[in-house]
Amino acid sequence: MKKYLFPLLILLLAGCDIPEPDQRERFKAEVMQAEADFAALAARDGVEAAFLHYAAEDGVMMRRDHIIQGHDAMQEYFAQGTLKDVKLDWKPDFVDVSQSGDLAYTYGGYTFSAVDTAGNPVDATGIFHTVWKRQADGQWRFVYD
Image (cartoon, rainbow, N blue to C red; front, side, top):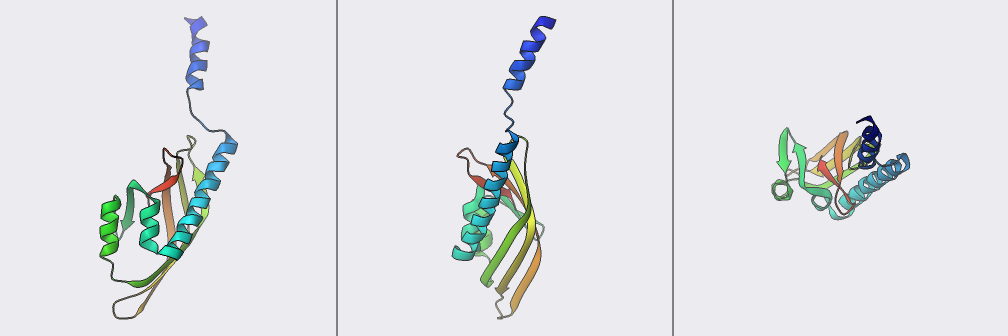
């Protein structure tokens, strides 16, 4: 039995799909680029377009202690919005990628501004946290925001 243990261990380890450290760094850079592209799309085409583009099909947004799950629910959420001239800007301060290289998370600061139905400015700043998942095609999409 002992003579089979070492070859079995080698086969098991060979089957593990753990990226090399430099590959994890590449994944971190990809996620940071996805965040930058996400923010640029929000600035150019609007918050709704950006969120719908970068959300995974089963992605989740949490807004006001309410979970909004999936593209249809996200579209409905944005359609119910009454704010105008919505601007959202953010930049991650930190990114990390799982050992397997398929999940990542970011956090950092954001600024939000809009105008309400009475014409009053609405401004907010805060901290965001996003969970990203690498899709089958290699693209990063958020699964939680």
